[in-house]
Amino acid sequence: MVFGVASFIVAVFPLTRTDTFPNESHTIDGYSAFWFSSVFTATQQIHITFTVSGGPVDFWVMDENEFNHFKNGEGFNYYTSPSSPSVSSTKIDWVPPVNERIHFVWDNSDSTSKVVSMVFSSDYMTPLFPDWVRLSIGGFGGILFFAGLSSVLRRTHREQTRPACEV
Image (cartoon, rainbow, N blue to C red; front, side, top):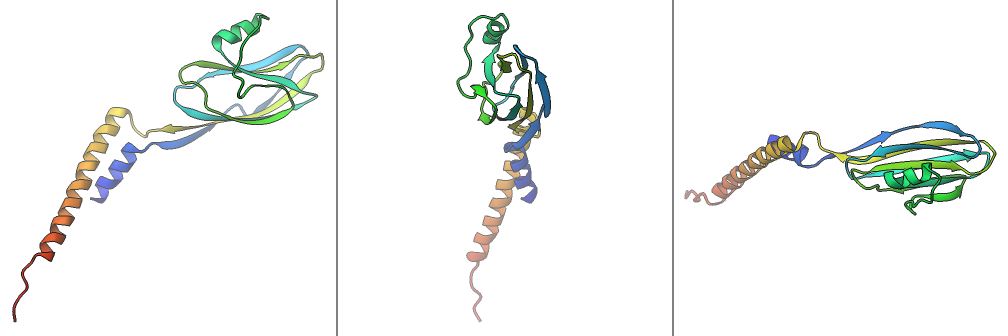
C-alpha cells in the first residue's frame, strides 16, 4: 500500500522547478537597444528584476511580429503588462503565452549609455516522467493503493464482525 501511494503521488503530481537566466549586466549605447527572446513551452510564471544605471530606459515585451516592427523602426504594439516605459528599476511577475516567441527589449532612447543589471527566473511545473509513463505508474500506483486500502478495510471489518466467544 505504501509503494502504491508513493507511486501514485510521484506520477500524478508534478514538481515545481525554477530556472534562472541570464543573470548579468549589459551596456546599452545611446539610441540603441538590448534584447533577448525565448519560447515558453509550458505554462509558467517568470520573474524579471532589473536596475538601470545612468538613467531610465523603456522596457518592452512583445511577440515576434511586433518585434520585427520594432527592429525596422516602425510603430509596434507590446504587452502593456509587464512592459514599462521610462523605468530605472522594477520587479515583474508575469505569465507569458505558451509556444510563442516572446522578446524582452531594453530600449535606450537617448544619447547616454546605460547599464542594465538583470535577474530573470522562471517557475514552472514539470513532471518527473513523460505522460505515458506517468499514466502507467499513476494507474498502477492507484490500483496498489486501493487494493491495499480494501485489504485493510476488509481485515478491520472481519475483526469487528467476529462472533464473541462465550465462556
